Every structure is written in structure tokens, then in C-alpha cells.
Image 1 (cartoon, rainbow, N blue to C red):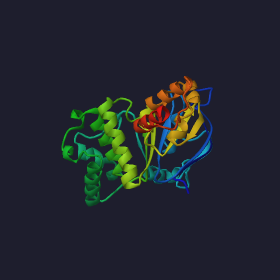
Image 2: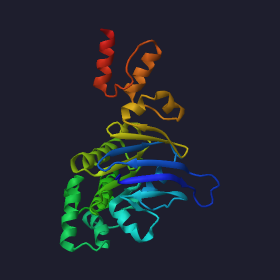
Image 3: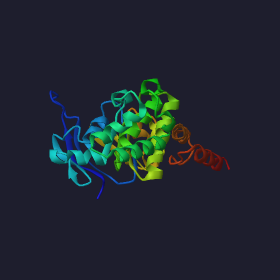
Image 4: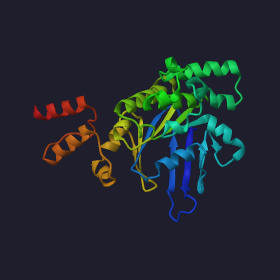
Length: 276
């Protein structure tokens, strides 16, 4: 059973005449790292909120570990399974001390105090913020705040974390911190990660890349498979990694290089092989 499954998912915001999502059907395998890429207005952030039950479908359904998110009596189970990290960490930080903020969610779930202490310490160590546990969140950098927000979700012990453009407000250093953290959660702890982003560079290390366009899935596959569809991505107003762009331009000039050469080393090897 996939940890998240959508079936013919439609969504329209109140007051809007046009649908935001048009019949999206997909499955997300437990333990995988899935990146969802798309320009603003593509529907990717709406999809993130539907995964967690913050929004409910206009038509179709979302299943989280087999539970329909529209069943109000099971909503707590849904949110225990799928945690959501928002774009702006300030919207999720509610306490004046880092460790108190991370403890907030498990306290509200009725977790025993000793277990809360363990969860808070474990979560802060996981995101590399344990030494800041007694700091004031508002004095932290953007990347550090976002890692505290991720720790707050981790303390709920979810099996899946959905991150809705978590690096959109961060500088390059903060983006690297956050992407390294969420990648480690998947690779080292087996937590399913769904990363919503419009930065193509953040998708390279994912197991799977889904491209959203105008409320529909435009492409779905491994990053190598998707980024090799250069013409499609350009039509969607999206860029490709610099290595892919270089090979694309060389091929247009008459070379015959593989667009699946994604890393710098692979690109260099392909060019060297073509030069003999």
C-alpha cells in the first residue's frame, strides 16, 4: 500500500471559477524521496495541503496509509502519519525557546512528558540543532529556523514529511542546510519525503520527480528521465541543470551526447568520450 494515494483528485478554491487541480492521480511509495516541481500556480502547494488534510478534495479522494482524508474522525491519524512543513518557518514557530517549540505538537497529542523529552532531543539532534535547544527562535538564521520547524514535525513521529517550498525564503546556504537535512531523513531514517519546490537543483537527488503544470501532471519519472525532456520543461517555463543544458546545446550543434548525464562528472565523461 502506498503511503499517499490520490484518485482523480480535483480541487477548486471557494470563490474561484476555475479548478486548481484537474483529476490528479498518483501514488507515493513509503520510504521514497519525491520532489514535485512546478512554476507558481501549477497546483503543487495545493497538492501539499491536500496530502495532509488541511484542504479536502472538491472531487476524488486522498488516501493516507489507506485512510480517506475526508473522514473527519480520522484526521488526527492522517496528520500523525503525514507532517507538513510550510514555506515560512515563522508561521510554525509558536514558542520563545527552541525546545519548547519542538515539544508543542507532542504535548498537544497527549504524549507523556518523559517521551516528549526523548522526542525533542532526538528531533533536534536529527536536524543538527540540539546545541541551540535553549536559544530563542527569532535569533536564528532562516535555515536554522526551518530546521527547527522540521524538528517540530519530527517530534510527532510521522512516517512522511511534506515540505511546501521550505527553501523559498532562504539564501543558498540555508537552502543547502535544509535539503541536506531532509535528504538525510529519507536515506538514514527511511522517512518518506515529499519536497514541493520550484528550484530544479533541489530535485537532482530525489528518487522521483513529478512536474506539475496548470493543475495536471506534466512529467513523472526519475530526475534523469524528467530532466532529459528539455523541450517539455522549457515549454513549462522551467530550467534544467547546467549539465543538461550544456549537453542539450552541444547536441543542437551536432554532437550526440546523452541527456541523462546529470552530474558534473557524468557530463565531463560524456564530453571526453565524444572527443575521443
